Image (cartoon, rainbow, N blue to C red; front, side, top):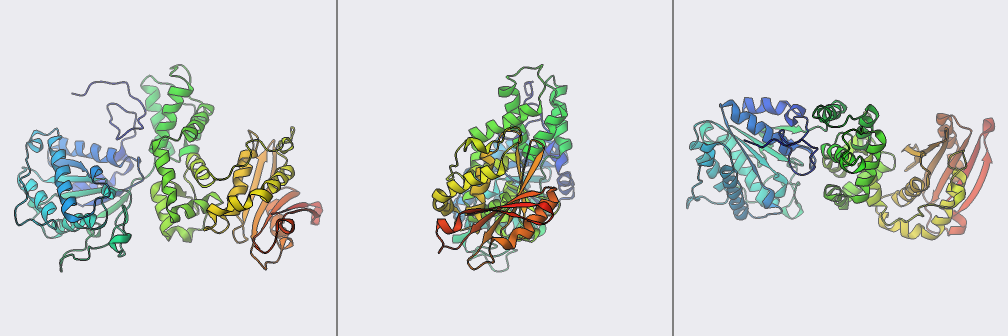
Length: 536
């Protein structure tokens, strides 16, 4: 019997109902319970630390307690990067044997897997082990295989082939009734050479798969389920569970800030609440969790960058993910881009999310801050630019801010652009965004969205009750010049209801020197409006 503990918000490993505050993971994807009941195999996909393992363990306990099936959870965690059928088959058997020995059910714990028969080749040993296990049980088996992404190449393909073969051609009593695969991404339907395949990117079939074998993808006969993030109602329920257990009340505004920072990422929600309780409020049970405490916790997480966030930031080394995150950070990308590999992987990783209009954006404030830091780590604008950039009582002075950026751009543009040269417009837009976000005083905010011009970005700096709209555009060599964009800037000003606007005009012609590209002009437009043009 498990000892009673004071519950807390968990950020290390799977959650346990007896020890941790949690919304039951099975309730977030109830269809999985029905699939098990119907004997339909499935692939449960979701980002790291999203609750896949917690769901599998919850469901395994639930299935075992009903008395109709045996449920076994196993993980391939120790098989990271393994290639080769022989080694993967041995590691699978070791993981299966370890899961049996650790199982609370005496019958499963008493099962001892026999050594492979002489006739068992690496292509069949996994299937044979599962057949012998199922034949030794008195009830059908439901098997959960976690961390499928740890295998790659032919090792993974061999495992998929054998599971698919058992599901299609095996005797029902001699193979698991339902196989639940858990991982970041399902096998890709298109073929890839083994040399190109890495963890999470699987070839369809091993080059030497036997003729007539079923497709090397058990998902061809299984359901694919994406584990959704927490909803705002889930976050509210978590906070209520904490308060009901004798913890602090979480104010309504704080719950909204939790959503804004995390967009329901389970690990992020738990980390923010845990940090707020332990380090911001110092464990004071009488202090309510406020929006300010949540904001301070989020800034602390971004500053300290725990292991989970470092792992996410490291994934930006993938060129496609980096490109997708850059586009999303600079204002979003169109819905038709969702089919691209980088965009899809960034969504699967939980770095990006898709809005109601299918436009990609960072998945909450923490991911936005993490992406910004990772992509602009080489950009070092001053922490506090010229004093005049901070308006006295009127909020930030946009003219002085952009003139300060011009001065920085003149000397640093080459070094700021270089690491982002492979992404069109990133070397210009990201330095501008990084500079403005760092230079804005507390209380001021920077909003951004795509503009009509190619690579264009509409900006709005809000503070002290005023809005300062700007339009950043990229001009290829031979383009029409800065005057051609004044009409679009006027539309941005109209949308914001202001009579003053700023145009950031990046001239991409390599033949022009800094003296030609960098200028400042002010023009009067129709209806008394004023446009300031910063040539860059």
